[in-house]
Length: 143
Image 1: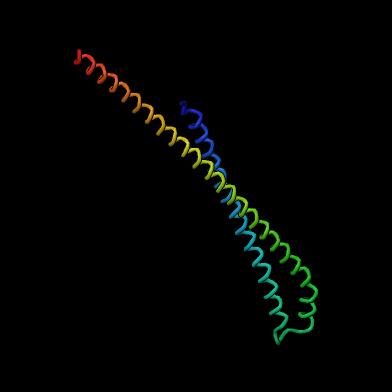
Image 2: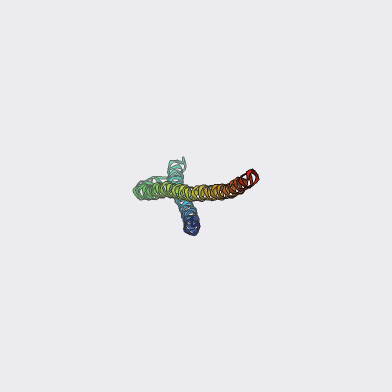
């Protein structure tokens, strides 16, 4: 059996695994940054609220907070949505990496089975030669 096609396929599957790892790595970094941005936006709302709720804050600080709050919430919602999208992208990338690894392992298994079959065929051929030689000897000794 020709092993070359499976060897080529194994290299291709290895390349696919490497590419999937790279993609996941990039998406994990994106998710990390998006989650950090969402936490900062939410923390900013809490900080601004704390400033407006201080005893020494005047009505102007409270009114400024009230005017700013819709923008702050919108920013927090946007960053949270981006973080959730990045999380979903990571989940898909993990699935692609898992599928690439499974395909790589399947080719490795096929190569291993093929090698075992080739070894068994060689062993059978060698045994047939030995059996034939033994058969000739026993025939010639009986004569």
